[in-house]
Length: 182
Image (tube, rainbow, N blue to C red; front, side, top):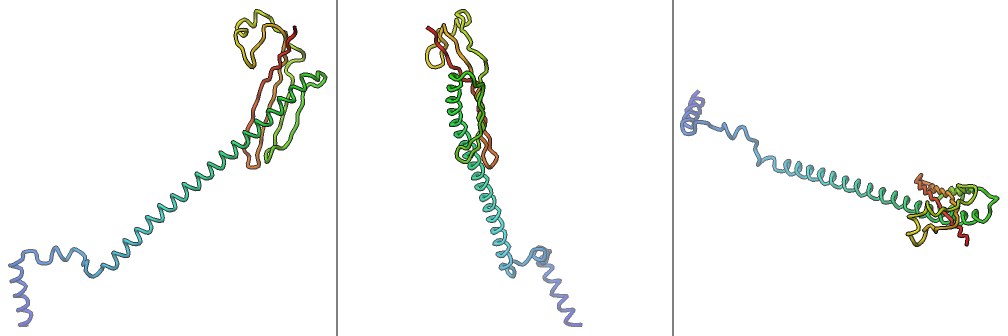
């Protein structure tokens, strides 16, 4: 009993000295005993943050590579279509001389691309130019200019290039061959 009284007395004396005994310190965790645990939590949080940033950067790089590859495939399909268009222009020149053939159609390979080429004459005969209708065109000079006299024929050339991955490019041209009669 004496011990309890003494400890009670000591407690009261310390209570007089500090009105809020251990109230503040009892609510806060003891940092001295759990430093290793906090370091572990900080290390895990940092690792998770690094993994998120790393995976995001890998995702963005992969998406960029896929977009660049698709753009390269499209540009290659476009180049094959342009090359096939030149073949179509040569065919139109041949049709301009061979009047018994109306149109030509062919499917062929240009590299890895399948190309559909259609060339057709749009008019059955030559269109004769009249001086009045070509009033403004006479002032234009250079390739494709219309002379003030003569006739011409037009040819519709359509090219469609299709790649293995599904990329498609279609080009259409209306080619005119002028026949100058002197």
